[in-house]
Image (cartoon, rainbow, N blue to C red; front, side):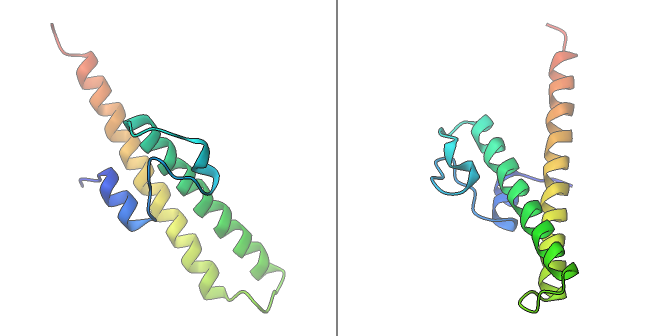
Length: 102
């Protein structure tokens, strides 16, 4: 299963290296590290939003529907799984590079 940063950004939300809004706004640059940092910040925001909606449903807020909370939780779960797969691929690539003979 091939997961790329482009796929993550299109399925979760727009991820830009020079994002000036939200919690990822303090990260600048266009390198791979800043892309991963922005992706992690986006997943963190999705998880926080899902948690907040879940609390609102538990408090029986009439403005928040159960369906809305469930969709937010699924988005957060998919984002986390995609991030986990990317991390595993990066660790595997690092291990392969470190085990190469020079």
